[in-house]
Image (tube, rainbow, N blue to C red; front, side):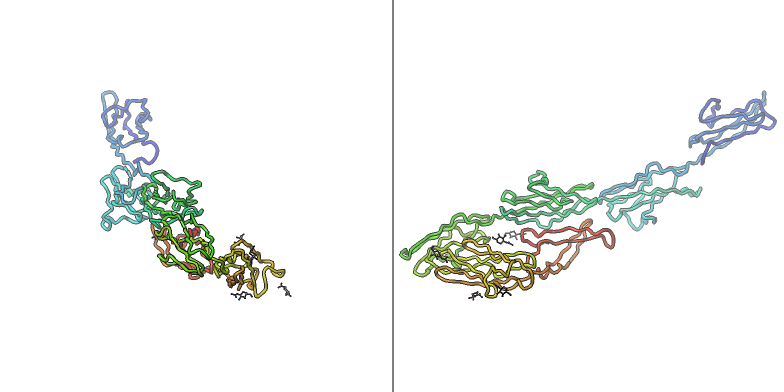
Length: 507
Ligand SMILES: *[C@@H]1O[C@H](CO)[C@@H](O)[C@H](O)[C@H]1NC(C)=O
Ligand SMILES: *[C@@H]1O[C@H](CO)[C@@H](O)[C@H](O)[C@H]1NC(C)=O
Ligand SMILES: *[C@@H]1O[C@H](CO)[C@@H](O)[C@H](O)[C@H]1NC(C)=O
Ligand SMILES: *[C@@H]1O[C@H](CO)[C@@H](O)[C@H](O)[C@H]1NC(C)=O
Ligand SMILES: *[C@@H]1O[C@H](CO)[C@@H](O)[C@H](O)[C@H]1NC(C)=O
């Protein structure tokens, strides 16, 4: 075994010799002028054979023959060559896909051949404990059905016992995991033509972390005026939803290990819209009057009629108001969603104002909010006044109040400056027939209480967190949730804001 430098053999001939020749193991005489082997005659009695860059095939028996006239003597030198442990092919990292029958490559040579030993994270692999591990005849390590947990640093160690020689190489083994997709909702509801956006989400697990892309009818969707995507593509926002957006969408999660896809569908509802409603004027001479209302929407809307606080039941066709009979014809009655009602100005004789609108208004200091005093009346020219503790509004002492009047409503915009601005406000509406008043209450809104986490479900690269909505919303709807997370006990906090979509709750 040559550690360094050329190897020399010197032979001495007692009594001197005229010629000293060397013969290679093949029997061939070594002639001068060769680069790999040289013969130097030192003096009368000695000659040196030098072998440069010795290799395994230089091994063998070298013979030297000394001659002087007819006298001849010979001697032999036996050259054994050992090769030290040599790693010829040990790639690192070596990558596999979870579930593969992985073969970790480590090519090691020596003479005599080495014993190869495998270690995982510094400890000897217990082949008898895990039958998935096996050393192949070429010393490669086989792991059948490799798992994510098998990832780490493996050591391929070569040993030559007789010489006490040991050498090793470390191999980083990476296990990629095919993406899987969890969908938050297979079917999402959206509303058309309201300027709303809708969110479709596919949470993907896998290693390396998958990128999610989206397609519709096999056409990839790109970020622009219609679609928006978050950083990793897992959330797609469809902007300005219309009926045309109704249908199926595919989300595709892709990484080195492969790809998988899931189908999601978006059902778009079109809010009912009243397309035909005509006011009628009658005299008390008329026996009856017929009112017609038509509406469009998807699904087809149900039409209901009301008069003041009175709602007509289905099938109830006639209504006696004072001396007049009103016949009501619902033009279509089907579908499920009732979401828009337009007040039909009923064509009876004069009546006193009726005040509509929500009684409670939530706001906070510095945030202007409207109290809506909406009035139904006939004749419809009503005078509306606002009172606060019996004092008419607006007045010189109060600057944080504005009034907006329309023919059928009055809006009192209150911008609370202190606690004393919360409380009761009185709206009074009058026409020729009569007067009605209603008390509205401005209530201080509060910050919501914290949502409580009920369950955390970890997946390979994401986690699903279930939480209860806050017990108290503080009076106004919750708009956003912020989640912050980091790896157990280390790393930086990461945060993301989840917006509450279209009045629905976040899951
Ligand atoms: C979508 O709307 C349909 C029909 O109104 C309803 O049955 C379903 O629960 C809604 N789905 C969601 C996720 O809100
Ligand atoms: C209150 O209503 C008026 C009239 O509709 C509107 O101009 C104003 O912006 C509203 N104020 C708030 C705070 O919504
Ligand atoms: C304004 O405040 C002063 C002093 O508190 C009071 O005398 C007066 O009556 C108030 N005016 C109105 C219109 O409320
Ligand atoms: C409504 O209009 C009629 C006719 O123009 C008028 O006589 C009446 O005083 C008005 N009523 C109110 C409350 O403004
Ligand atoms: C509103 O104020 C008027 C005038 O002071 C009063 O007659 C009426 O009872 C008040 N309305 C309510 C609901 O308090």
